Image 1 (cartoon, rainbow, N blue to C red):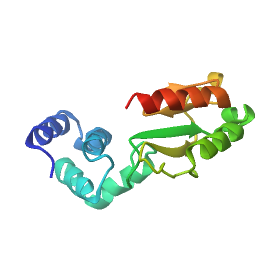
Image 2 (image 1 turned 180 degrees about the vertical axis):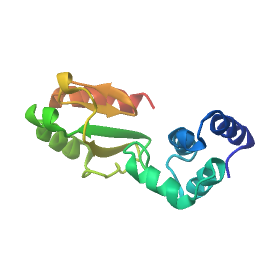
Image 3 (image 1 turned 30 degrees about the vertical axis):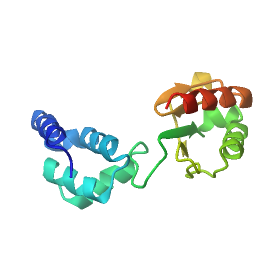
Length: 157
């Protein structure tokens, strides 16, 4: 169950949207921030707030890469595998991340710190290969730079 203050804030956001469905992503993101991921309970709560069915919220949630319908690490690493990043050898970066973290794509490190997820485009084509960690973008990646970023992000809990 979400705290009353969060519920009030979300109700205000939904009320300001025309139509209420316009606020769906904001509501899902806020509930995800509260729970750590968009739980089944959060889907039900979002549906009630938005006046949608749980199935409609589920359909929206599974469309967006940044909405997580299963538990994720404290920080999610999105690594771009679009054509621009692929041409800049993102495969090498992805393999380095997998080796360094000890997980496959979609996996979470044993300590629960990082989840590694590929994404189709980050809009950083000029700085490819690229990734984000906890929403912070990083570009022009090399294995050495990836190591520095992971260490810095691990220390910035």
